[in-house]
Length: 518
Image (cartoon, rainbow, N blue to C red; front, side):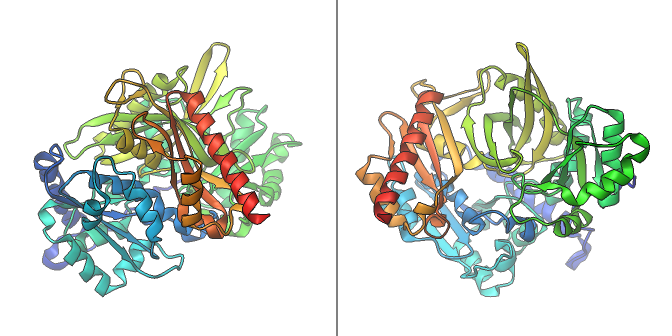
């Protein structure tokens, strides 16, 4: 089985003065350390934050996600940064965002008049609905780059925050002369499926039996054969593309009726086209193409009668300090239960500190390699009697589906995460939980505009109550009319209360949209 280094970093490119792109970027990133030391601790300090929600991932895989063009709205929670009175936010999107959506977020700001916040917000759009990543669209528009430079002004107090940092975002940072609060793309291999397995081994964390750095379907067939030979009772295995997103690059192989070892390899090869793909409308031919381009892994399917999918999130600040910032139980669905649909925060009390402790081992290894910003580590957790086994399966060196709901919780309550207990506490010490989903979807929602949603919310009291620090907030609102899909964050005093608020909200949306259709 052929093995190779699946690093995604670009080869050193030379530019004026002989410095490579990597060297220039490292020099630019030093600005962020100086900003962090002088500005970040003072909410009243003037600063400019460029929010770049580009999904700079494989466009064909991303196209399988319903309403993916509107995922650029998931970072609108960062408009809450405008609660700091001298902070300016520049938010760039592929296509314009409805003014009703912007007004909705600005009215969530605690203690800041909407007009004051609006004066410090710059919205820019490429007016381009194509599937190309947003950052690529910006780089191809010289006048957009000019408008961005003009909006940024003083680069000494400006930085960029991104959904993910690819070579495209690195190039844009160099064009604009501002650093990125995020991971250097030279390190992205450690967030791939293959790199994750290497980090878990280095950190001494339990991980599934499997093989990484696979380059084609012949590698996959040999890896599946080896897995089954080593574990004859294995019933299923998972094939994953290195750069898969939200489970969309995963596929399941079924070993039912597998022959004995001597006939196993040709049987596996013949059965590969029958892989059960998680991505909607994925084909074997396209999957084969993506695997050859990005590489991948094969892992055993972890069995269990009681099985959960928790995750733990960490952050490395520009001073190199590492901290745990949240845990979640992921809500998964799809054909084989691997598609991210939402999350419950915090993770179960039965194991949240355990996964935080195990995840910290990997986080420390990533910190030593120079990782910066937010990242998450996913587990599969299986109950065995009164104990749980936690198996690490993936690292995401970017913001993810659990990032924006947690940031909404922080901004709306002004509370903090207590790493010692795994709870989130308001300033008065009250715990808060939430149930969040990006995939609240119904055919009856199609045709509802952002204004319609806001009308429904107002008439039915669906809002966040600052006095009680409970309630609901919406996101992905732009996907509602065309795709019948939106996101909800329901915040409550405990898990049951948060879930009740979530289901109440969905019931109201179902009732109101059905009445509209009728």
